[in-house]
Length: 310
Image (cartoon, rainbow, N blue to C red; front, top):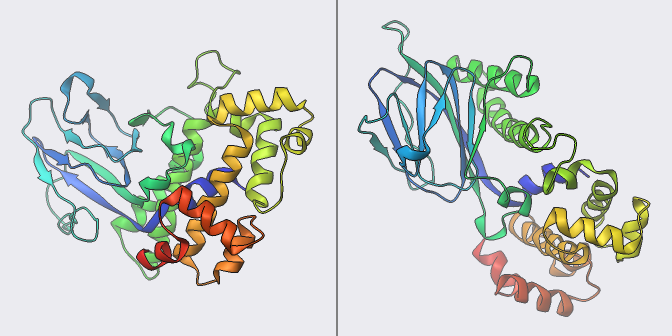
């Protein structure tokens, strides 16, 4: 199983959305805080991103730069520092207002941006995403992140000239773009100081003993895994594995296994209509009673109540 894909799928809600935005200087937009995550890709021109509107932490953006706002913090985009931004407010469906239709003729915009947003369940945020900074900035570099650049080009093309099937293609490409952004951040050896010695979730995804244990837990969360068994998958001693796993993931191996079981159960209750008995079994519990007790301890409500609310 792919841990990175699982982490995103477990907390994603609804369909992502995206749009091309043409800007004529001077311009500025203020994005309110929201429960999801968002991205901006500068296709043409230049801009400044101000986290929470704070000019002291402004990030300069040039053509090809990608920024990902992992935690839904409020932020501002402006053509120049000091420009008064126009507010953008989410609608009742959790979407940013759509830009006006792009004219077929007219003046060339100073700036063209590709913007998008995802709806995420913050209550069950995967620690992999929780460890990200407020602003992930991926500057354009020659030869870097070629798959990410290809996805951006395809998405921009579909949004620029919609054709039959574009709705489905755009949704799939926005999901793909998120995974490429996360892959570029976590697996970029030039990002971490001390190249070749990744830390945190970078090491959890790349160090064979840790990655093998994570894949096993994600592939079969119902299995009665022990620390010794998980350590053996990577050829480590029990103590060495437990120490390295906790340092990278932020919790002991069996605590993560319990968290992932409950997260999987919550997703099944939201998205499927399987009986509670089946959900309990897939989460590694022999009885509905034991599962319900563990679920209530984790979520604060009974499984049936959680399903109805979802």
